[in-house]
Length: 275
Image (cartoon, rainbow, N blue to C red; front, side):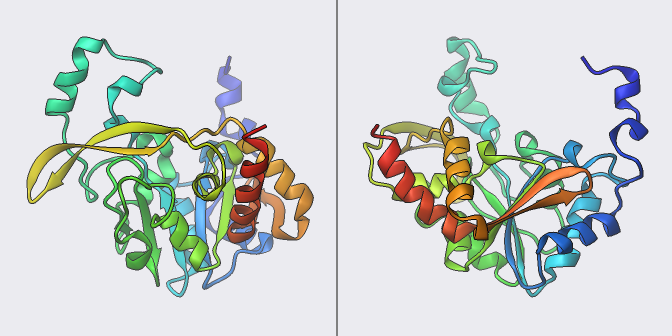
């Protein structure tokens, strides 16, 4: 239980966490101008951030600069097929009315509250581009933003042809800003590439096609994050040169070589998921 004293700013950190502090900490960790950087974030983990989510976005942009490319997941699971909902579920009799009437995904306006306040803030920043996938969109800003989010396929939204692969192709990095491997989307790309008995799932979401709203369905890989922490730990042990840890604000933060991670994860899933 969180008490009143625990919620006070001074209980979370010794001083306000400012944009300048975040930027300095990112540079100390090894983030550089010109990087392609895929960011997973937890605002609360950073401490008491003066200005909230915009302070984090401003810091990230100031460090990567327009010569680099900043990428954040802006997933919209609130639009997914309710047949898959469990936390909480809705009555089965509501499923079809939901599919028939829920507002369609629109990159410019659809919020992404379930992936955190920093991505939800970032998606509406000037110059940010967002991909067209109705469930697994990514938003990007900087030199390669438009190319990173272009042509996002429905059936491999976290695999081949996705923004995750675009980050891989550019030799990018993953920044876990107060997060861990449970939310490391790059491991989904490794899932797709690995040689294992891949189960599939039927997915759906509302989209605009030719200006008209449609409920669109497709078949996709049934992803599984249960072993992501084990894979991430094995990667860090095998490739310490590809992992840098430190603090940003008061958040435990990790900077990872994404290509090395995905290549390792591809082999690891192939060897371990069958077992």
